[in-house]
Image 1 (cartoon, rainbow, N blue to C red):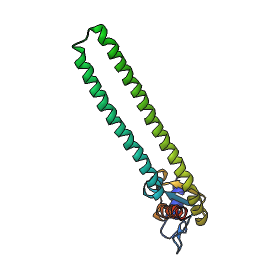
Image 2 (image 1 turned 180 degrees about the vertical axis):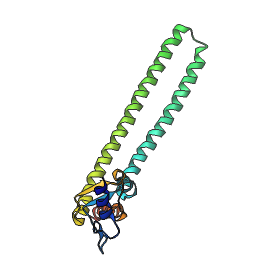
Image 3 (image 1 turned 180 degrees about the horizontal axis):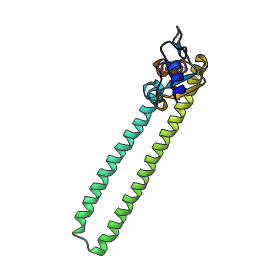
Image 4 (image 1 turned 90 degrees about the vertical axis):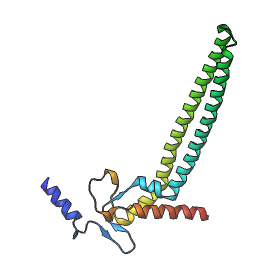
Length: 179
């Protein structure tokens, strides 16, 4: 345990050669870290993906409000009719309304599930778009691994490539737009 601590101090120490910053901003290190959530949130591609998902969420919420208003009006009308109907006449109407509500709930649950699946697909697409950028940065730095920042107990700031990855991913997106 003490040897590992001594090794870590040697590697991460101020005088150590573990992580070197080159003039062009590339870090030379066998280990790099990235805050992947920040890469997603702050990159133009991540923001684009999130905006599209937020549009779908807003659309779903708007549909939900319209459906709720319609069902409330229908329930109110049914309640008012109840006073003028016999139980035998009212029961089929109430059953039909309940059936309609259940169908709407199933439909809404399916749409929410579909949106969740889309979120997963969009995240996977983002990972696939970011992967070549991160691989290139890893090769340039001579790194053997890129770790998620949250899975890293302790690191020096110089091996965090999040800012550079955001810039490169945005640059790659800009290149594609120009084509």
